[in-house]
Image (cartoon, rainbow, N blue to C red; front, side):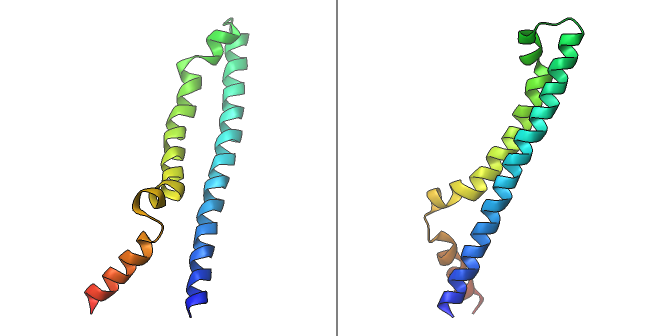
Length: 100
């Protein structure tokens, strides 16, 4: 029974990690394509590469989606570091005892 519980928790952790890494890959690919399109479009309209790259419209997509990605990373990696590795187990046990 104990090994089954460990296996289930490990699988949940792997699913969370996979979800984060998928999110990261999509973030990089989609934002790269959007940025390349915006930069090329701006350059064709007479702007310099520096102006096009550092244009707010180009950077803002990376910034706002990056905030969401950072929150996702915190939920996957950050919470156990703050609350301790066995926090979930202790909290589950506490809530189970409270229900009795």
